[in-house]
Image (spheres, rainbow, N blue to C red):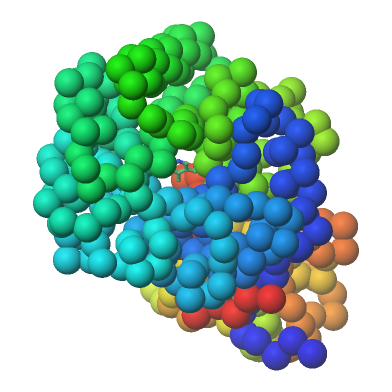
Length: 371
Ligand SMILES: *Cc1c(COP(=O)(O)O)cnc(C)c1O
């Protein structure tokens, strides 16, 4: 019996379905390297990592060393690549927990070299996003990185920044990024450097540019089945990916309001006629975006859509259930997911909140239970 105030439910079957669909889309010889950063986009990193291990997934990427350590402590096996910066004082953790570090640029490679112990790395190569990675034009610097005795080079990768766009100029930019990447890898390999595994595709790369290849695909949002809002998604993905996460909350109280009465902070909700409000035990402290206040967002109660009433609080949210019969305290409301045939997707919530599903999911708080 579920007793929580607000919680996340993870659909194992949907995760398995998405793994199978994505594997069928991957270029030949390419393996999944799921992104488990930000607590696996709110899904629970250890939970998802262990499930994926059971499905034969043997490589993962995370944003920071703490996330890698958490996965290892939780028993997740296989290669774990840290995509972001690790402070030199934390370099011992890399060996201790068998983590692979990204070389974020040439200066950082020197810090890794000066640490004095052997560290496993993937070299980040910047082909046009201009975020992390040594610039692809800096072939000499890349060669010097490869020459560093303490760096055990396991791979090299780049990141595409407009692969989700169908605009012709963006498709051209993506192809140019890929060409620059393969050209740079070719030069390094021709000079005799061993670069075992290379990768460049994230979710939108796999969905819209699978021909660009690589040995790994660093899929995040597609794995979680939350990219239905991407332009071009319908044509590219058959059968569709399935949402893995649902977000639910308990109804703490149901209250009747007389016409003219108001509710919540700022008395922002005003009952124009006799109204009924349900109080959900979830708020922005759990990651529910506060911009969904005042009817901008809708939730499911009794299988019907109910608009958010007034201002979302830190721990509570009022919803207008005047048009829903039989709502009782203790009932469950669905904020993301389905109830009696009606659905609110995270894509819909993100659009209403003026953001992308990735942000909504990654901000779902640690206060939520997961099952
Ligand atoms: C977050 C991230 C990914 C995963 O991106 P999705 O679009 O969610 O698939 C892949 N690569 C890098 C470098 C990332 O930062």
